[in-house]
Length: 186
Image 1 (cartoon, helix red, strand yellow):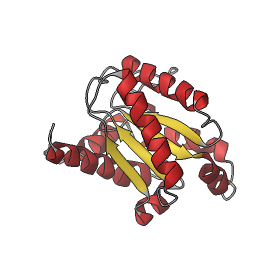
Image 2 (cartoon, helix red, strand yellow):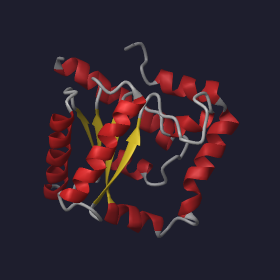
Image 3 (cartoon, rainbow, N blue to C red):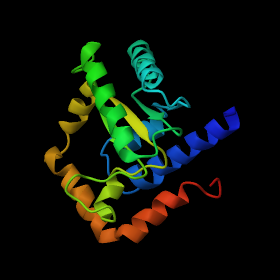
C-alpha cells in the first residue's frame, strides 16, 4: 500500500475523531488533544499478530521518548476485519503491555467498524460508541487519564452517557456519521 492510501486512512480516522469522538463528546479529553495536535496516528499495514504487537511496543517507546505525544491511534486496515479476530489482537496487545512493564503507564482501548458490546445486538446504536472507520487500538497515557478525570464529575458514568446519547441519535444517524468519515474515499 502506498503512502497516499495510508494518508487517506489517517484523514478518515481524524475525521471520525473530530466528528464522532469530539463532536458527540464521547471522550471528555479528546478535544484538547485534537486542538494541541498531540495524537499520533499510525497506519500498520501488516496483518500478522507478532508484527502488529512489535509495532505496538515501538509506539510505546515513541511515547516514552516524546512527551509532546499524548496518545496514539494505531490503525490496522488489513486482516482484522472480523471483530473476533481483532479482539484476539487486542487481548494479546493488552497482555503484552503488562508483560513489557507498561501496566499503569499506558492503557489500551479498542475501536472497530463491527464493534459489538457483549450485551447488545449487532444493530444497537450503542455499538457506535466504539465503532471506527478501521480496526484501531488506542494507546493512552494512564497518568493523563487520571489527571483529566479529576476534573470530571462521575467519570464512571461516561460510557453509559455515551450509549444513551448514541441510542437517542439512533443507529441510522450513528451509521451515517461513521460513513461520512470516508467522504468518497470508499
